Structure formats: C-alpha cells, structure tokens
Amino acid sequence: MNLLRKNTDWWREKGGWIIALIIALLCYFMIHPRLERFLPLIKEFPAIGMCAFGFLLTLLGIIIQSNTEIIAWLKSDKQLYNRFIKLNRRVVIISFIVSLLSYVIGYTEWPDLIQNDNLNLATISTWLGLLSWFILDVIYFLRIFYLLVQRTDKK
Image (cartoon, rainbow, N blue to C red; front, side):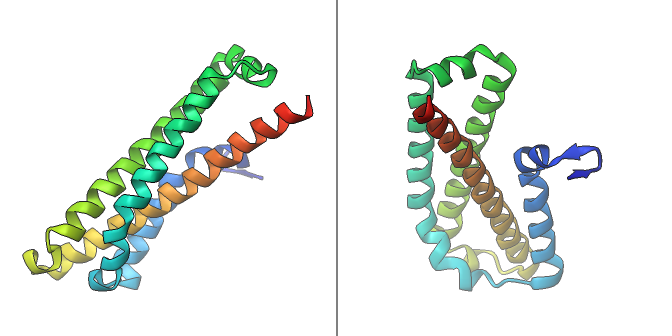
C-alpha cells in the first residue's frame, strides 16, 4: 500500500501519533466521553504504564547486550539500529507521560477540581489519544522484537 507516497511500514512506525490525534479529535468533537466513566481505568493505568515502561527498557537491555548473529547484523546497520532505539525510546516516553497524566487525573480529584466541562472533555480526549498511541506503538515494538527473536531461532 502506498498512501501519500508512504508505504505500510512507514505508517506502522510513524502513524501512531496521527491515529492518536484522530482519536483525540473524534472524542472531543463527536463522541464526548465522560471523565467519570474512565476514572477507574485512569486510576489503574499508572501501574500498567510503569510495568510497560520497565518491560520495554528490559527488552532494550536484552537487545543491546545480546551478541547473537541477528543482533550483530541489526547493530551493523546503523540506520536500522537507530530507528529501533528511537522507537523504543518513544514508547517508553509515551508510557511515562500517560502514566504521569493518569496519576494526576486519577489522584487529584480532577473532576471536582475542574468544573469546566470543555477542559474535562479535552483532558479525557487527550488521554484516550495518548493511550491509543501507546497501545499502537507497544504492539509495533513487540512485533519487531519477536520478529528478531524468531529470526534468531531460525539461524
């Protein structure tokens, strides 16, 4: 598939933020989610996000310290290796941001502090957009990681 002169791999790697923006805008302008309905999930997300944060950093450590043939090949291609590292860094940063935002929203009694419905709607829409970006990037990163592991097993 070649959409706007970009192939499918480009959209999978870089398109997460575009989908997140679309989801956030759809939530804000069309769906109008209520913050109160998502509050239990938001309160639980810091634990999930920080586990993902640690897991992704562990996977990065495994890749960096591994000396298998496929990892050596990956490291020899500087452009590909740098893209892999940047993807991991981006997912870790998004995980941290969503966890921090979840902690602030969930444990500061946000709905009671902020009586402005538009600000509450913008907050939950932004959170849902960031959550979708996080999920898409985690799936993409794990797919790449397991492809590397699978290729290592075959050699």
